[in-house]
Length: 474
Image 1: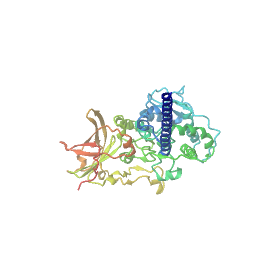
Image 2: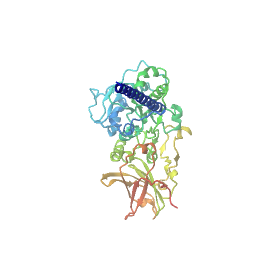
Image 3: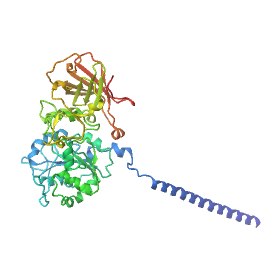
Image 4: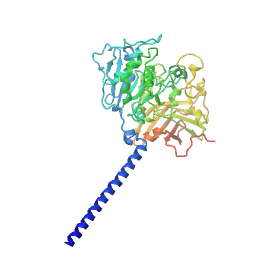
């Protein structure tokens, strides 16, 4: 009997101890969980779920294009679009007011072009800008109508004109810097101060092209018609898009790789000193000289794309190196041109833009004031740098070789003159910028190599060493 009582007391003690242990475990677990939740609530949100989501996964298949055109310009300018449009990878539409005479369906007979879409009637909207074109309303509503196409798996909507030349892989690389799930309005302004002052420094100019992230575009499409009712007095389509995005509280994210190209004549200076960023677009190809001489505008662009198709990210990237023996300064605009100056120049002077072009509109000081540093392009060709233009490009397992031939000129020569050169060869590795390099770009370096021929110059482009300076030699 006593043993039974002792066992009962022992079992009761064990039972009480178990209850205490379980209760203690629950309390400790609760305290730890609460602490973790509190820590997470005070931590900044993780913008990207992973590096892959943030950068590497965006492709052409995630972009839908809206291209503004009209029946009159389409017949000529569609040749520009053929150069960059990739029908198996791209989606989108060219928006016209009416179907061209030769077309019987909404899809152009040429499979190398995007399909054609007829814009909706805009006669109910007012347009009061004196001397302007009310087609600006139709072009502005292209944003709404492109979204209404209801494509799936979209991350970005990109808009441009029929004479906007996009560089597709560079467009993808540039947009990949941004989280497509957030509200983004990406583009650039004009090269001319006066144009920006008149239309807005905060507006993406439509000819340069601009991008709107998917969630922002969906919201913009819902409110667009009600918004543009308030802006009948504006001149262009891009002003209407900008105004409605401003009403949504969204500002412009500037990307200098988009180019409005509000210049006329010889655009060499702009192309030879491109910003330190991938080339995304060119515009106004009908208003500048062909970018390579003795070619049509279309053939000249096709020639440039020979290099683009080999190394898209490197196209027009400027690299500068100095020749110790002859005291030359050499500026490479990869895939386009090489300039050799007969003397050493400070690097910032080389990076400024030679003013080879003419003003977009005649006028005073503001009409010729640009949004970048310029320098004189000497009127005497024999006092300019010697210019070599792209001839051929080839790639193999050892890298990429571009060959540049001297542009013709009738100048006297001396032993130390770069004009004795006939050809320049530039060797590179394919450029593949990672996410960090896109966020914090750095110019590459180059070396002048020894050559057996006095008429040939070999140059190798490479990444700079960590503490390496690009500078002229004493």
